[in-house]
Image (tube, rainbow, N blue to C red; front, side):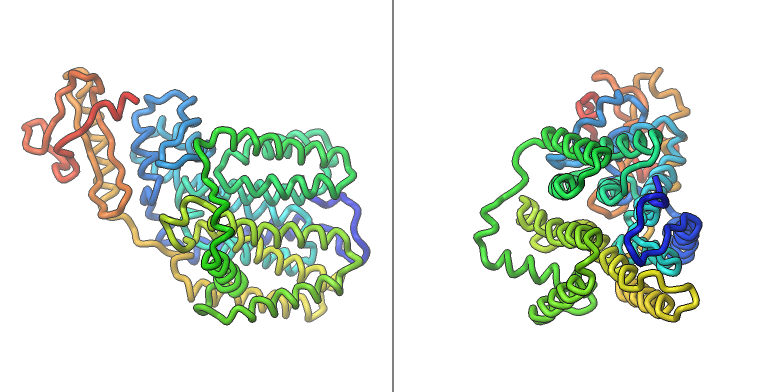
Length: 454
């Protein structure tokens, strides 16, 4: 699936997979060094707690992944599938499996870009994964949660749109499968629809057109499952929303949220600079198409939030609402620098200077935003999981008894499971009962058994 064999534009280096692989490896090392305390303490953060609670006990059929369980109108089929699969494992290992799955898919989304051929300069191939993985992915949750695969899966999908036509049947099949499956990651896959249609019009290669058509059809099929409208076009008529939209793009994306409320003309000056670079590279049609798609994804992904019904709930964007814009803005900068450098030799100082500037940006960004590398741990999780395992071994099902266990983590979403018999005639054990000999602080006082039979 790499881009090493496609025709090169004039003045570009050949693609070197070994350098791309080294860059991804460097990202993994830096990620472990930056976030070791958080990556060694899984926590069932955010909606992972809901997925864990829903699929616990491996009693759900696999078809259950095509229903929403996190209180939203859209599906997260990829995350649900892994949650369903990991429910078969020992309960004490499941938070680790959630985290490892998120970590692998997050690194894979960055690697997908690295092997796309968008960047060819050897020095930038080393730096690009660091820029995308440590700054473009704007929160640690992309690495240590399962539910955030709804974003990293979409990033991988969008990155695949930039791939050249595959050179073998195997590569074609792999790309087709990924392009068919990844739209089911989450709602931001809607962005693939206009991007794929635009690229479909701009390419004459039949093989690539088939792959883009697969993307369009799969995305449309996914959105046919969304219950109710999630878009409010009337927001376009509200001036304060448009102003806030532009401020979000300029302040939090273009200028990386380093300062608050920059004068808006700073953003327009940056757009003029982008126009100037586009004029310098006007003969590189491939770059102009790629840049148009990347910048389109930046603006469109933020616009999706401001047109969403979620606007009334959040008022302003969270990190997850900005991740597509953040990721592709950083990619746009790296790709633009790569095109400006051309095929300069390795000993030229300019690639090193540009790489140094990008690394400085990444370091400053991570110091400015510590949540990209660390999140507070969830206390008591290990004891909670051991308590679940203990009661699993007490034969509660044979006694027609059940115990509801919840982790009082103080977070909005807490894991809550029912261990034992699930029938309507089950006897629910309470904290004061003689059978409760361990983990009384985790035992719930009430439970609705209908929840488990849904």
